[in-house]
Length: 135
Length: 418
Image 1: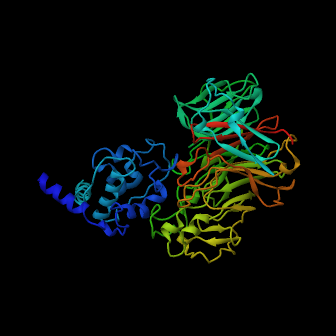
Image 2: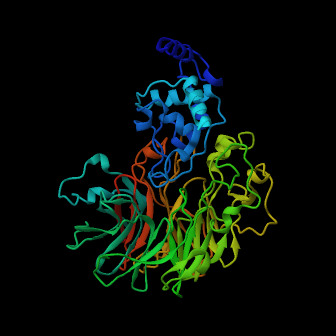
């Protein structure tokens, strides 16, 4: 099972244009998607905006369990209990993106901005969506 | 003629007595004859501030420090640096901070509270709750306020959204028609300044509507009128790339300075203001295309307009005879600076808008102080060293400026002549 998952991950990471990504050659998969959907608010360098949008640089969610970033993308600020954050902007859910696109963005965030959380696969995203539907 | 002044070089030491790290300092530019010095550093997230008797400066904190959401500071030995710093307002945090009729008022995210303020006293204990019942909201929750000197307090109740879209900040989502947020938000509510226990909807009067967020609100005593700034919406290019290219999205919409009369509608979310052509335009979520004007709507147009996303967070009408005539009567605006102008952020500065004694703008606005962000380049808002956010005037004519970013500091600006 583990071997299969690793194989799937490698296949996914080797896609030059994951999820419709049309990044320059050599750019990380997900970079273009990040720019389109995330970069305005979280800033292109992931530094966030003071008191408004949290930084992604060295962020706990980008260095912890595989679901951390993915849950934020799927649910937006609904994933954060009111009053538990110093950041005030509303983040919309990006659940309209495909599993591949969400995995590409989450992987980009978790492997950029000095983060070491590692990759997220489309299967991880599909599993998360399924578990929420089941609940 | 402007000159650059290393503000902090004038301040040799911090409150600890240790030299400040050079990396913490910025070169501030200002008109000839003015001088700036750092009063205090590392205060926490200081927002609006006000100056009371006995030299006390009071500032609200956006995040409480050791459980307290406001700070009082004073320079007791007259060396220009605060040496007596005390935190108060247990369990609170907020933005608004003003003195009126012997009381210190604070605007938390959901209430207006006050403490009696004897000379030379730092508030203690529980404050009186003057107004409650404001909606709980994540975005634009700052309850900044202004007093008219006739028994009223005017409170900003920001709209919780970007453009009142049906789906929050979702590309392709149309605007709500009508925008339900305007019933209890997106406006200025007026209350009795001295009556405790008021509820927003039961006791408040909606003085003006159609504003997304007005962190800067101030009564102009010379003109006897309320002035405020409107924060324009975000993400035009992201949501409407076919209508607004990245340059247009950086410049638009204008940040707006308004003189507000009772019953005014400033047009949000149905319109925005394009400073390049001097017209109110139909918002794209409501059918606009960047060209359709909203001219016959009755929506008020600003008395001055500024580049997009500069984020005006406080304004003041310097009334001091200590200041040169060129800077009397008009509005000084503190811009917090942008995060939404692509890879080239800007606007971390103070701007002066000249006005006559009736409050009519009678000249072009110009930068008054700049350099808060540091040398740059400022690609992201986080690259800015400091971001001016609050303004206050002392009885001696000194101007106080706060920055939450960069640890939380206050500058003092005085005019010393040529």
